[in-house]
Amino acid sequence: MFKFNLFFVTLMTLVALNFPAPAHSSVLLDRVVAVVNKEVITWSELYEMMDYEATDQVKALKQEDRLKVFKNNEALFLDRLIDIRLQIQDARRLGFEVTPEELTDAIESIKKKYSLTDDLFKESLKKEGLTIEEYKKRLSEQILVSHFVNQQIKNKVIVSEEDVKKYIDSAKQSLNDGESFKLRMIFFAKPKDDADRKTIDDRASLIIQRLKAGEDFSALAKEYSEDPSAKNGGELGFIKQGQTAKEFLAALSKMNIGDFSNPFWTEKGLQIIKLDEKTAAKSIDSIREDAKKQLAEDQFQEKYKNWIKSLREKAHVEIRL
Image (cartoon, rainbow, N blue to C red; front, side):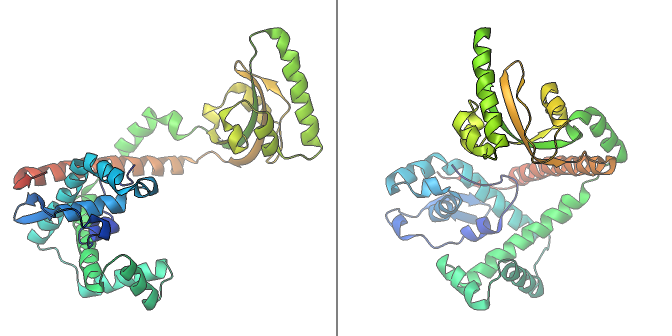
């Protein structure tokens, strides 16, 4: 219903703190919905955040229905706004600041990333209802929080070699399941009566003949397969070797990329598979790096949550929803 990451402040979220209210919100009376130390958060600020973060499906609703959705999510988004304000306040209290040069470099990087000329950049801001001054203010706050979080939390995350070893030992199977296979499948469910197996075998033989004649596997999957993946041409995505049934592995052992298998039975039914892609098993160095990144991320998330909790405990926060 809404698209956001609870733990990270996005640029557009910060920008949304100062968006002008859209025309359809004029029916609402603006009011203070929270006080964060000596700063207030208004309903229009909260509404603009929800309006920006809403999915296309929510945005397509009639105004009355959209407002109902927003009403049901007020508390969640207000919490996010409060957390953002607390981080900005604490960063400023500790003397963090963003230099004009940093701000200019950030804007130039954004323009370069999205291939924006000066005129296109200004036009983009205009469409969002922002002046360049408003945009710079919110971008500066985003950079401020990023610097603050990196120095106060992220740079203090330490993952030891012992931690990595323990993590790999406890999650060895999930970290390295060998090769991965991107598959498509045509599937027929196992019949209750074994006498019906011949009918399915005959149908599978017909499909194999059509595949050998050059017909498209995806089209035949849509036509015949009884698996939910049929609507996507039988696509199963990537499956790790360690999570693959032995019957599949036996078939795959004889296949190259682009090949389709002979029909084979499993306890669930009859399958014909096609191998679209194959990725090699990870090296030990790659496994160690993945483990280290995951441990660092877990530790960061835990420290971040505790830090936000401590900011809340020390602050005067008054909610007026």
